[in-house]
Image (cartoon, rainbow, N blue to C red; front, side, top):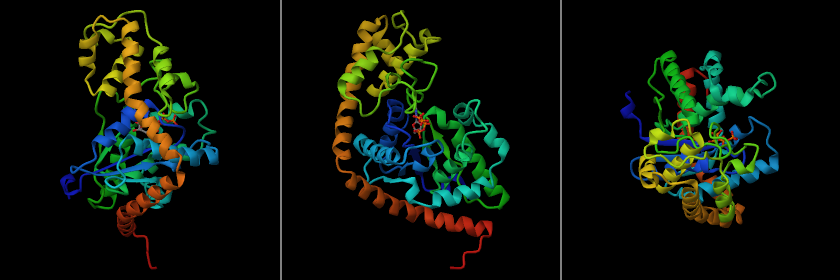
Length: 340
Ligand code: AQP
């Protein structure tokens, strides 16, 4: 079987480990919305089992799961077109993850930079789940024979590991069962950086609220955070090369480009020579114009959690219908007896 034999199918997920950020929006969600349509089947998942690889307060986790679902819906994920659900409602993810734990090698996991970043000096004390996370992510994708995975730059290594797991499984069992998934990392904002330190990624769980834009921030807060974002004293240059070694400036240009659907080159061409007194208010106005309607719609959706739960349940049923047969076939290939 060649790659072309697989149905073009997009899978991607987002952790409810806090509220959504502008990084999640530009690096993932906006592109997920753009991939809906006739070219692909699209499956989008709130990956709650990934969130618990670090401690989550149970009530907060449940709220964050619904909030992320609301954020996806408000951003334009259509639950009739895409399959939208939360991971823990479809047990195939965990079942396939165990098989992949037995396929992946410890040496592969040891190379994962996200684990090293998140564990820091504390590798003995973090959960086993945090270490095994990439095998669960491979299962998330391959339980649906996902062929394309739109992600931010930070997840590239995990999608490559997914390919390694699929290739080793196919090789060990002499099958062509799992596709070699393609990461889709496109656009000007594949790595949105922290507003206070342009060398660090913008994260939902970052320490200070001022370092990120949350999808639930109101217009004043968005504007204030962007106007206070760290920059340098220089005006904007006339080429992108002039932003080398200016990470904070580069980040704001990339954010502008991502929000305006422009290239970063086009933003620089428009604002060449502009000082921050001109660029930051323009960026703030653009961000408010793009994000406020989404945050208003999120508030509306979150006022009715039962409706969100209903949509997630419906999505989980549809997801199960795709993943179930793939899991059963995997069990057959591995030689696990299914006699009931
Ligand atoms: N700063 C970012 N720039 C571009 N893309 C990003 N993504 C996350 N942050 C950025 C993309 O969003 C998708 C979902 O990511 P996730 O929430 O499941 O995991 P994460 O990358 O670990 O996100 P956070 O915000 O950093 O979470 P915490 O703080 O809990 O670890 C992915 O496609 C990711 O690339």
